[in-house]
Image 1: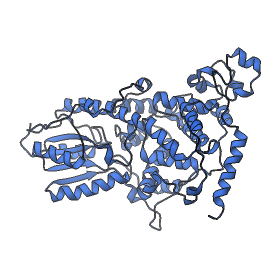
Image 2 (image 1 turned 180 degrees about the horizontal axis):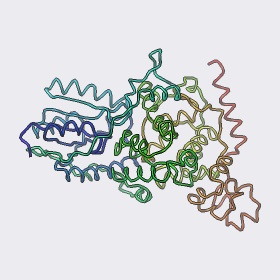
Image 3 (image 1 turned 60 degrees about the vertical axis):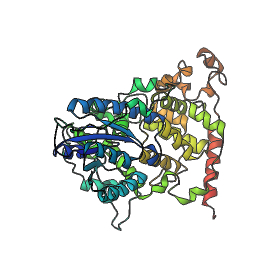
Image 4 (image 1 turned 45 degrees about the horizontal axis):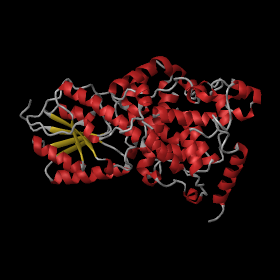
Length: 476
């Protein structure tokens, strides 16, 4: 207990005790009130179902940790500034600390709150905690934001020298007056109809799960990352993306773990470059906030997207007739996550084979991904659609059969997620419609019955996509 005026530490997507600058600074000064306010309407996009499930588990984990260190996590719901001021009134707090967010709407809200709180007599202080660099600090020689990744990351590497991660506080001094708090279940973050069985099997939200995944990755997968990161059938990636998104682990912690792993040329490794793409996504979103809903490349506003509810639903359910695409979409629905190679293949299929607007895909991923990060989701969909910064050209159209044969050569990934095809030999598993009748019969595959025929022909879809691209190159 403490008789000094406590400090409110306002937690958002920084749900950790280690390497948390706002918490660390507050703990050095006296009593601390850790507060989480659910204010979904204040975000650029309200979190989707999978994100809300993860948030519930993460808050539960964080609450246990705060209790163990001495000061319970306070949970509120409503307008952020009003709830924080009410907590201050109940505890006598005169200062509010937090870690910055660079998502456009949140950053704008935070700036307005600073002025309001300071006018009301509060001391406020914010910290950079969830990015390696401030996106405002990186610019071209002409003073403009970068729109190409490679020069952006080269500029970042010249500046990057992150300090060692901050330790977990040994204790959090509890305020003399304890404020009211909601119980976690009162936030109603979990669906009444439980569709998260697969997520619970696949994930352990919270800092313990984050640290375990980092440990397993550096010990077993890092050395083979350059090769195995493209193979969806093996555990070759770090699976840290949701933990990073919710701030259960910081990029500084990951950076130093890789540096200490003994990996050769680690700073220029492909995995560190992937951290760079995360930074690039935030850089772009900060400088081009309209890209949440609009293409960065203006000509794509005229692209003749198709509206086909049947095709969209087939894609969402993993019933397109292309086994690799279907495997990826079913993995997403079952586990809340999809391998990055599969995100590219499935995304390409939606916007190029089906010519369905990339925003439909972004919305589906936003609702179903446990790592649904606004900046990364926006970058990823605009990249695959050819309408964003440093994007893959629209005419680069993945052939899902060739992608399957290259990255899932034995069909292990498809067999796991599309069990209707598990008895098909590798030669046919990525193109079952070409298999001889006797092979289909022996494999118990009945095309059009227990597994669909392709909903579009690859060659015809590719030609139609290229014709659509030509149409936006004509003068408006």
